[in-house]
Amino acid sequence: MTTALILIQAKRKYISQLGEKLLEIKGITEVYTITGKYDFVAIVRVKEPEKMAEIVTEDILKLEGIKKTETMVAFKCHSKYDLEHMFSIGLEK
Image (tube, rainbow, N blue to C red; front, top):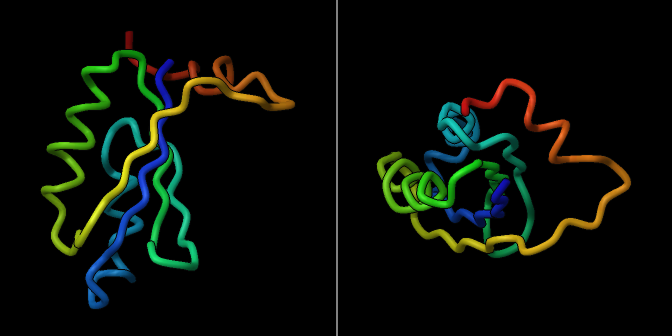
């Protein structure tokens, strides 16, 4: 499982609708509105790294209202929960 956090800066008039549009992208499991330089953080979880590249360089950038993104790919997860197991349910092979 490859996980990434994508920080997203949006054009102001699109903020109210962009969160739901981001969730429509397959592989994005959570979207949070946040404070600071960015407006959203999207959590992406995919089985193949190639799919991550497609989400970051194509799917997100197709959405109207995206101003800027910054992607951070996770190397290791430290959690009380077995996230790999939790998010493997319902994922395509």
